[in-house]
Length: 475
Image (cartoon, rainbow, N blue to C red):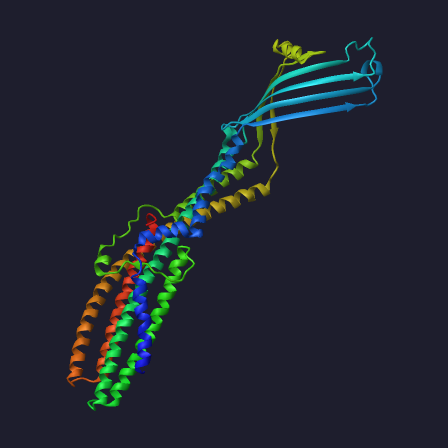
């Protein structure tokens, strides 16, 4: 490895330092805010979550009032005898306008106004002196279920199922957003650690360059063998590979960070938070404030399976409805106004009350259907139990791993300090001719390994912290 090559390798390091210092510090929270604002997948998930409860209103429309109207004109030329009394043609024009509504307790009501004009053609004035007349009829109709959908129970369950599906969607999307933020936070710390690894690799490479130059001078002055120089250059080549690998990881981490926040560039000019022992020690441990969204969604799915089983049983239940209607009828030969006045007198009213009954004959098919829904209900209960177990296990495992990682971090930091002292001492011995180049290189490797161990343990702690946030707020 020659001096020209070493100078070329140093140039990117200067540029990198300038790039890192170009902008202000980007905190984790500020970065996550950028992810929320710039990540289309995150925004789409939030939009889906907001839309779900609004779309559930579709099921509630069954209770909304409905306006209806009908207009028709008919001509009937059937041959009727005697024609003098029944005519040769009947012209009929009618219109109907009203409103209907289903109540939450199952009663269906319909109120409407109907008007018609009838004309008999071809009749004899002797038998039909007034062959044309107008009729009006204000009417109310009521229907109340006594068996199937009694008190509106089946409709209420249908609405509850749709609302429950909407809640499951909300919960699923909320967890999806949490996970996306956890991954984004992981990208942030990955870049922080990649830059730290790059710094360590760069420092180790610079130390290797100094050793190479020192041994080159000694060989030139015939104070050392060429074997020492070859060993030093071999160490420098190893350190060069480490720098290249660290640079590649930094570039990849920067690309991932920008991708998460919707930035097209692969370069990150922002200064990031430095991970110091004090920062690790002050990081608040996330608290498990409630059941996680995936467990809540499973509990909701269990509830919906119960409603679905009840609804399936009621779907083919015999139908028995109490029905009633009342109409005020009026008639006049020339005027709808007079017909309306006549109807309000109640002299020609029509009243009806009765029962309507129907029942499917399902037999074995109905029994199998109910059994299938009961199996679904059983499966949903098992899913909830398993999801609760997995949540508890995951939280417990994260707590255990956090404690272990903190202990390892403290130990690796002590080892790093010790390895640095050992390396410094070995270099001094080598300068005095009391140690070999191989021993210095071994100390260099041990120190570099201890540095990387500290970085890896920091990464593990930060990854665990991010994962624990899925059990609480968005972080």
